[in-house]
Length: 257
Image 1 (tube, rainbow, N blue to C red):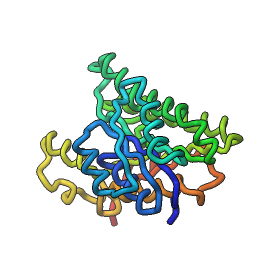
Image 2: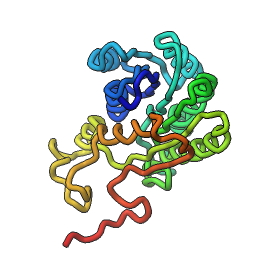
Image 3: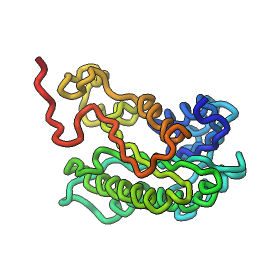
Image 4: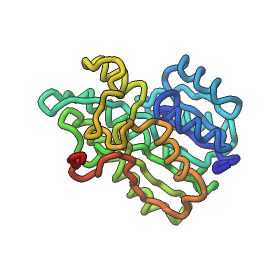
């Protein structure tokens, strides 16, 4: 078991990539604090995960949320070995339609809350020689025009990752980031249908859309996350790793032969 007896916090852990990371962590021997905002969804998730998972409901729009989450983990398990900053608001709009309240919410949940979660957990992470894993996005490099605020938030997370890693390697706290590309979460499948795609659309995609022939799953992302949460990735810190089927630069697929 690669995470035996470690205590891991996973924000946004009740669905999608977060739930997959939580499940993989429990499988690898960890105890997991699953954070979310939907209590029914959260209760169903931790029930499925079993006795080594507990739920914490906290709204990351509230400045008090980081302390609530950290205290919940300590009350449940007595220590913190890892923190996965996965929770995020997705979506956005172009500059001409961007309003300030939406932008503030995006930055609060996607960037401010992760930073202050790290701060709230920092002394415990120093004690354990722990690991922070930030879940970014390939949109951190520029992003689509309609994902302006989201892309800015993930670009900020990337800078935060490298800054904290550079400053705190001497404290024994590692900070790394993975940048998923296009992932087939339930939300993604649902959103595309809402935008007009037909049910079953992932199976109709061509190799120019998904070179491997199948969309990336949350479970595949979770397997990558386990490496960065475990001791086998020591002493590496400040890494930003793209988990994407396209090259990050260009994104122009080669013609199929």
